[in-house]
Amino acid sequence: MFRSVLASLGLAAALITPVSAQEAPTETSEWRLVIHGGAGVILRENLSEEQEAAYRAGLEVALERGAAVLREGGSAVDAVQAAVIPMENNPLFNAGFGAVFTAAAEHELDASIMDGRDRNAGSVAGVRYTKNPILAARAVMDQSEHVMFAGKGADAFAAQVGLELVNNDFFDTDRRRRSLEKVLKSRERTDADRHGTVGAIAVDAEGNLAAATTTGGMTAKAAGRVGDTPLIGAATYAQNGVCAVSSTGHGEYFIRVAVAKTICAEMELAGASAKDAAQSALDQVAELGGDGGVIVMDADGHYEYVFNSAGMYRGMIDPNGFETAIFEAE
Image 1: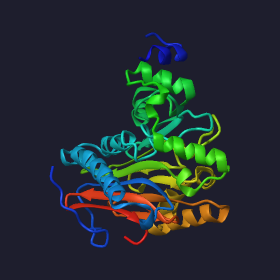
Image 2: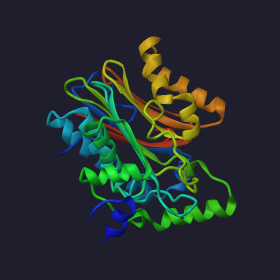
Image 3: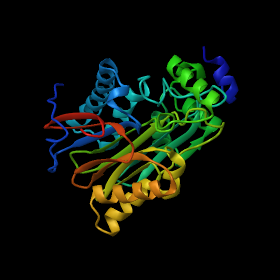
Image 4: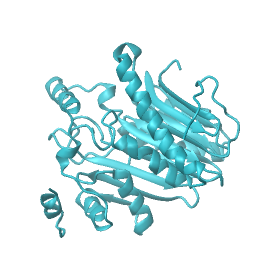
């Protein structure tokens, strides 16, 4: 099945208790995980009860996968990786299977991960055959001297370290193809066509922070276009004692503001709270014409969801329970 893929690369062949967002504990916890599944114009009237339930179920699966690592004393970086993999495999989210199409009706995927202990990081951009891009980003961090691989080189590296490759059409879904046809016909994109990204941030029992972000990019994007997701400091950043951030939004603006690093810098150097630092960065994005959202956690595990769009798929889990939310007023 994958012979053509390899040839093109030039290679040889637990139980948890829900809590409401309003009642979410904000005191320091022994561990905590926060996730997002994209932001944009997400309105109650546009989601059926079945669709809303499916999204919440997808968020809960991701939360539980990451929490399973943290409950056993695992690291924050392992937890954020574990949390985003189910979202890469869930066609409801724009990351991996179910990723949006490029203008050429193909898929180009991006991902990044960062370990707050030593600020080691890894990322991939424009991968076309790697089933789970976050695993490729992690391999770049752990198994190379580099931070980022792109395009054919990223897929080749993934193959060399033994990751699963798939044909590019593995990522196809009818839903995303309809979105592509709509954008190509109208030549206009909605927020939903721009803001499909998933991410996770965590603090583990040792107080270590980590962040991960992964995406299929923008519907009908030009071949080779790279957004903020694989760029350390734009969508993803983690630094022990300071913060962990994962972003989702219109990537061109998040790159220009260096959103994730800007948030951490305001927290570290100006003493800003996670909420204030995130709002300041998103205000800069808005001034340039963009929108989106971030999840932010400080050194004590206090967390914030901050977004300037109509909604954001999001959730949190810690030893006290979990929450999920979608709409603005939750």
